[in-house]
Image (cartoon, rainbow, N blue to C red; front, side, top):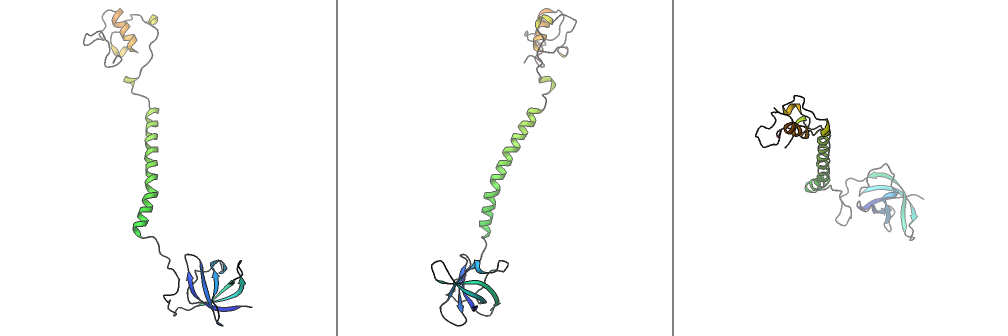
Length: 184
């Protein structure tokens, strides 16, 4: 047997309220799960159709709710436990955003630094600073080369300055050849 009544209190945060039956009597508990799925949130003063059911503890409960009308003229009294849905205050939103964005930026900076190091490691070094291994000393021979630009390594330049006359590879006369190019 269907009943009708008016939603006289609603706690939106907890999802339940009470219906005042049109025929009078004790208020009936109603849960949000009994409302149609595609409908909007229940409003205090709204006329409802319902069937009477029982909760697990045996108390009366409204089931299979049908929304009839909404009484917009009825004022909400102080005794009604309807809560207003409010969003976060702006400072709260900003703090939440900062808490979400800051770790992301730190991770991005760390990864960007890693990628830069990887790309620098992958780039070939400038020719002047590359170290080319010298062939064994037995393969060197005086063949008329006299300048650092003609040498392939510090070992080769040192062998030439010590064994071949007329080389011009020791500009400051300290016995170390090609100091700017090979032998730092």
